Length: 223
Image 1: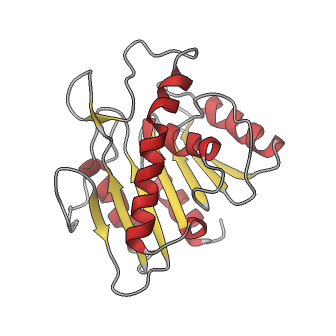
Image 2 (image 1 turned 30 degrees about the vertical axis):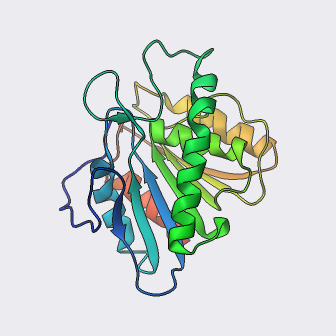
Image 3 (image 1 turned 135 degrees about the horizontal axis):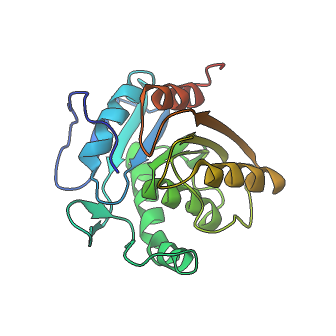
């Protein structure tokens, strides 16, 4: 469940874990953290970070690797999907959320960027973690962008300090677009600000339309 890797990878700080795609000299305007899907890696999301970094020249951009080797094969995972269902998913996410939050805060400290200027961008399982972090720490980030994602369970609170942007392919057979539609309604019903881009014909993945939707959101460009 990886993002496309057609763009050349020129990340700095490349290593076995997180990849720093962009680190501006001097004070940064913001921090963008990318979180991959299950069975994927930081390298797979780095090209997306590269594309976005071109429009965010004063931002730190980091592709974060999940902490656990995937138990279904190659790659990494935030939590196991072996036997996962609606009943046990919330507990699995809750168990690993402290480490996720600690990773965000570590990069905020490294970049010298506060929560209001932090954006979390997740794909698939990474999107679940980014969305659910809003329930664990209400003001962890100013923006959460979820591509082909969902909440692990219906949100219980919505912080005015965090704006959600959901991007979902209408042809997604892994996580149906209805999950993002529900997340949008639920977040707004709780008083939160959220938007949704539905992409006709897109399955469980990221295409140029998804990249452009994310770029517009992160840069404040009008639709």
